[in-house]
Every structure is written in C-alpha cells, then in structure tokens.
Figure 1 (cartoon, rainbow, N blue to C red):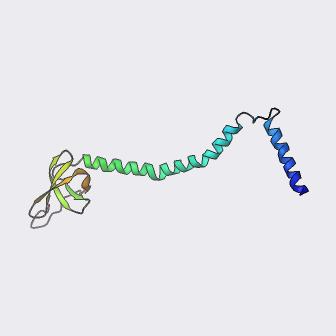
Figure 2 (figure 1 turned 30 degrees about the vertical axis):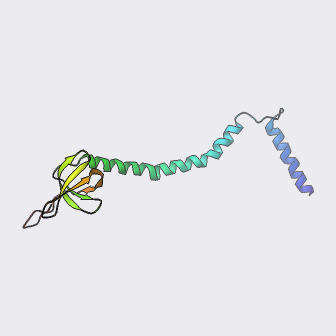
Figure 3 (figure 1 turned 90 degrees about the vertical axis):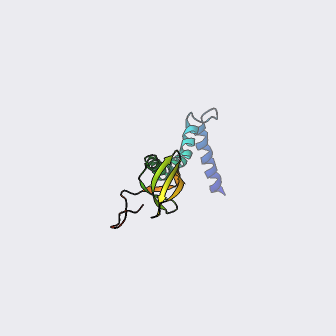
Amino acid sequence: MKFLSLMALEQAAVDATAMGAEGEMPAGAGLLGTLISLLPMILIFVVFYFMLIRPQRKKEKKVQEMLNALKVGDRVNTIGGIFGTITAIKDDTLELSVGKDNVKLIFARWAIQKVDDVAIENDSEVLN
C-alpha cells in the first residue's frame, strides 16, 4: 500500500512539473500527442493506397485505353467467352461477327474483355 502511494506521489510530481505553474499543458504538447495517435492511421492509408488503390487505377486506365482503341476488324473476346470480329461500332455498342455462319451479335463496349493480336487462320478458311 505504501509503495502504491509513493508511486502516485511521484506521478503527481511529474504531472505538476509538466503542467507548469498555472496548471496548463506546455504549448505543442497536445498537438504532438494528437499527431502521434494519428500516425498509425496515416500509415495504414498510405499502405492501402500503394497496395490497393493505385494498382487498381492503373488497371482501369489500361482497360479504358483498350476499349477506346477498338476498331472494325479487331478480333475480340467478350466477358462471356464469345470470340468474334468487330464489324461495326456505334458509340457504346459493337456488332460482332461470330462463328462460321457470321452471325451478327450486338454487345456493349464494356463487355469486351480483350483484343487478340492476330486473327486465327485455318488452312481451309479464316475464322472470325
């Protein structure tokens, strides 16, 4: 019990010297404490930005550039797994020629997953 009261007296003395003569905290002590307590949150945000947000924005930018560069004659793959050749482009829709019967399908521009680099050719026919 005597040990606890001695520790309490020492803590009170430390607090009294830190507070100054008028009982006020020294200037800047509150701001420093606030910054130190916010530092982990700031570090978490920075890590999330560089690990999640920034790569996602780069990926979205590449996809948007690919969609804007579509042109008639490109061989594309849709998000549904359909391969076809672009035959017409109107604003946000594309007409694809699909299969050996050249069936015409209309897709939204955002439904294109990727553009193939070269057309697939067979000895007897050119596939769409």
